[in-house]
Image (cartoon, rainbow over all chains, first blue to last red):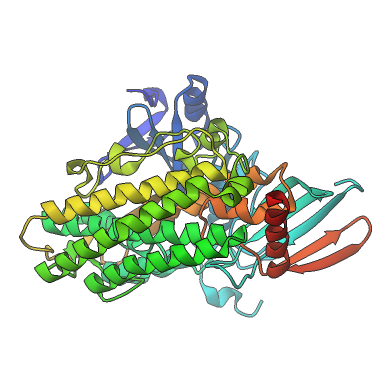
Length: 142
Length: 393
């Protein structure tokens, strides 16, 4: 297996309906795992980040693929709902814009990534619209 | 930014193309030293809207993410839901999906080629290419009844079937189209105008392409040998015989040649589909509430199209995440601008086949001198056309 996720950092595994394995990590950051792949010279491709509101926490999913042996997997980290933050991996792989989207839609701070706006206007004050408790009425008069 | 440098915005509105986009560019004289893309002018909150619609309605919402590669989004969402629902799609439906996907690739690449020719002021070629594109649009209309937003898919299969009459029309039109495609290839290979304006321009190295995780023809023209149709076959691509063109030059010219080669491969695929398509049902009925998570990725004309869906014993998706190919490629096209002339901006930006290219309004600001100037898209294109004339003299 080329994209190795060390057992000691994995809390649980889950099988996606589309066949990939989803690794729930213990730590609130996947930087260590990704850095190891990059240091080992893997041909890693990041397809996307997916932000999720799990109601008790904010989850961030990372979809990785190894082009050499056509392996694909997802990493998942869980963050606190209040002031969620994690380490950015934008210096390792092209995640800059994906992280910015999760920042503005879910309020997750990625330390080390100065880009915080991807799609919303620069002067946006409407909160984090993809959180489940977001209501447009709360911001209508602002 | 120092006194020698000028900052200006390109966009967001423009009359020529599909979507608005802003590029904030810092130049020294005529040369670009830094560039940044400002996205979001057409953000419609589709992911949020999907959470309040059931999967059948979301299917049509997904189709409206993009007008040019609408089938790619539509089919990708259907495929993701089919994973969650554990549905086996009939073989005939998968053949029909490949047929429409390749027709869409043909019209999308031809549209792009025309736009690029227009950007460099080669309008004869632009009209010629778009005229040929009409043949493909007619075929899409014959099969599905629509030129865009075909409404081809349903969860569990497709909605429109092929009969012998349509099959014959397809074969005849494709035969008619082939010599015209050869003519397009000859123009691209021999036109001094195209070579002068695109050769060596906007180079994206393999390292940059890998680091920024670009996809599709943009990645393949920078030496990344990856095509989901061949490397992670979906639908029935593993039964078909086709090549994946690749180049390691990474400039705009190599992207043109690569896409023209892909046109020939798409024709090959369509002919095989028409020969091999089995008889049978075209859809499997799907009803009920689902539970589970799935990711579907397919090769859209512009690259990897990514959909994540999650259902929690519901008809409405708990979460739909869409990552369109331009979103992945835009970072590299911004990097590619650095070091080039202002007049090359439309060409380089158009080269990645984004859903935007030219500009309606360009605001030139010299912050240190408090000076600003507004340039229209016409002015910027004029500059590009003048450059073509200059280099051709």
